[in-house]
Image 1 (cartoon, rainbow, N blue to C red):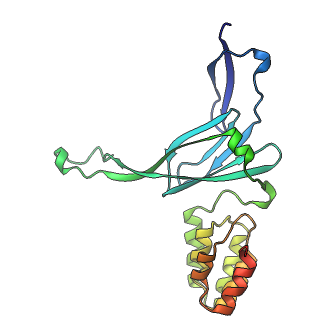
Image 2: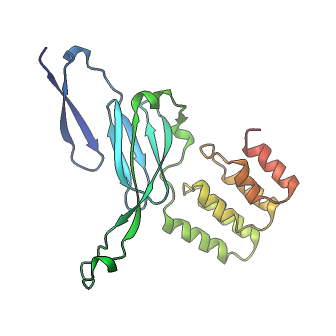
Length: 230
């Protein structure tokens, strides 16, 4: 049987689409129809927002740190979230105006990068979360730093809590950002009350994280009962 060309379209949101061809020896009538998923990931200066329709997804690029999260949004308004590990890679100096030095004098910097892939079959077998129950994209570092600054400038601790609660209504704070902000609240009962007010169902707290946030046993027990599955 002659090989047939299977054509597909990859659409990068905000960028021109392009065509790709792949050899396929199966009859045209038997070609599988794949759902169109939206793939999104946030990183400072290198966000991902694209449409994908194929049996496997492959990506490589820069990360902000040792992990990079991706969310795969299905047509039924649900999504699966995955975290992939990133590796530190040495990069050559990019300053073209720097004086010439010998190879032994060069001091390459390091950058986090990742090469990842996942199959559609594996994704379809994973649990999903309704899009309405999530918050995206995560707050950018500049917006988060402005929040921390506003909390520091608050005179009373109740004001610090109020600043954080108001910010959580407009910013998609990550678990790490929430922890940093909550650490600026000394009173553990107020800290717990604030955590309950900024809590989102798409963020899962671990027992270890809660033990770092709360030192008083009776407050810790309330937090464990409220935010972990025991």
